[in-house]
Image (tube, rainbow, N blue to C red; front, side, top):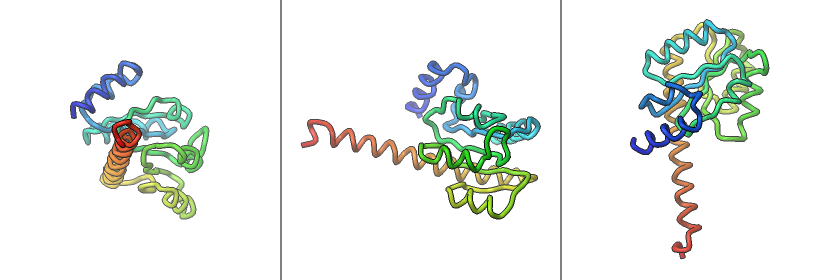
Length: 168
């Protein structure tokens, strides 16, 4: 926990636009990308009432430009966005470490949901969805991201040990 607090404080100094999001002791962040302002506000209210750190965006470009802290994260992503289709964004960011994705859409169809899930999405929810379903999917995504970050940290530690002159 002390290490997480140190990371949060040092990250906040380098990225002051994060504001109060990283002032919290919560060890995660949920990104919401939806072009509907009312939906973003409703999701922000739901997630903060569930004691989650939340940052919302109206477009994929805003999300991509935002600095991502090294914290467990989840991306709640609308399929229909003004600048790019959410499924195309999923494909675009797949080559780098990115949060696990929970898709939300008002225009769901079977081919889109299959494509999203095959590409690694945690869930594909059709609006209107139950808050409990979204919260469950987000918790699953955060747990998987925590595990991925832990494995990444363990791998880095092992690589450092093997590359040190004392390893021989």
